[in-house]
Structure formats: C-alpha cells, structure tokens
Image (cartoon, rainbow, N blue to C red; front, side, top):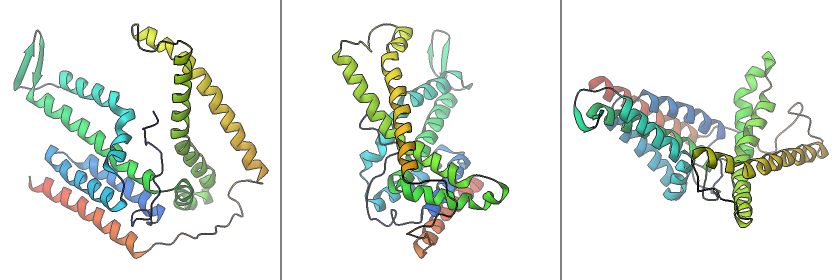
Length: 266
C-alpha cells in the first residue's frame, strides 16, 4: 500500500509543475473527453504518446506513474474478463465447453482496459505535478463564477482537495493496521471470499476510527487558525496565466484535432 501513488504529489520544478493549476485542471478534463472520443484501438497510441511526453517533461519516473494503476488492478482484471466473455461476436477464437471467446470480444476487452489505463495514468499526472494548495486555489478560482448563484466554491474546492490528500495518508494507515493485526496472528489470506471479507473487519474498524480522529484534529487545527471559509481571504501568490499555459493548451488541442481527423478519415 505504501507504493500506491494515487493522490500523492511528486515535488519538482519542471515546466509541467510550473503550469497554472487552472490550466492543468481544464486540460485534464479535455484529456478525458479526448480519450472517450477514441473509437479505434490503434488511436490510443496518441494519448499514450502524450502521457509519455508529459511524464518526460515533468521528470517523473515512469514506474511512479504506473504505480497509480495499482489500486485498479482487480477492477482492470474484472472488466477485461467481463468484456471477454459477455461480448457477442462472430469470429470464434477459442471454445471452452459452452463458452466462446471471439475476436470481437477480445478486441473489446483490450479496448476498455486500455481506455481505463490511459484515463487513470493521464489524470494522475495532475496530482503528481500539482501541490494540494495549488490545486485548491485552481479549483476555487474555476468555480468562483458560480458563487454568485450561492454555490460554495471555496468550501467545495477545500473538501475535494482534503479528500484527495487523505488518500495516501489513509492507505499508509491501513498498511500499518494490517501489519499490526498480522503480528497479533490475524489471517487475511485463507478461507473463501466471505471469510476473507469478514477478516477485513479488524482493519476497517480501526481505519474508520483513525479517519474520524484525523478529521477532528484537522477541524480543530483549522479553527485554531481562525479559518472561516473563503470570504475576505487574500493570497500571497496570485495565479496568472503564462505563455507556457497557452502552449500546453495548444498541444492538447492539436492532439484532439489529430484524433478527430484520423477517425473521420478511417
């Protein structure tokens, strides 16, 4: 669990780290749309090349990005198997008793799994290259126009950032609890699925207690610093768009245009 990088920040001073957090949030949303626009499996090479290029510019180790997929390994396997056996097709590759694996089902399974990998790997770059404070500021400024309609932009941005920041903290806490329970003789591996689910109770109960305790400590710390929301607050570092933000937007828009044109001509 300590090797999981989901929600963690990788400190650095690269050109990607220095981008405006608003730019990275908007480009992340555009990237998600582009990945869902892909209809041909081979076109996933374009988003893959984009993710690799951004990872190289951000000077983040590739293995560090791949670790963000670790929490989804069982979901990936489950989705692959479901699509492999439940997708209808005509070209039969393998027949096992009454179960048929077709070429169309295999292509669909690979397609769905590739899409999920690119979504998680690409969007994790935003949290890896954006500090929680910058992410909060970017979210708040993007949602600020809705505050005129009574939308709590600052509070929502703060809650989202705190929830994202607590993911690695709670994973580390769960790992410590699991090791402590193993030292007391707990068994998490043997038995059927129901027995394994029941064996997780000694982990989940202390984890929930720890989460509530951390939340209470965080609330007391914020109150002791006279935190009362975003009303009247000022910032030491004012966010401003720079030429690098325009270049990053142009690069991703070019990628989207290439995907649309290649699919239209295919």
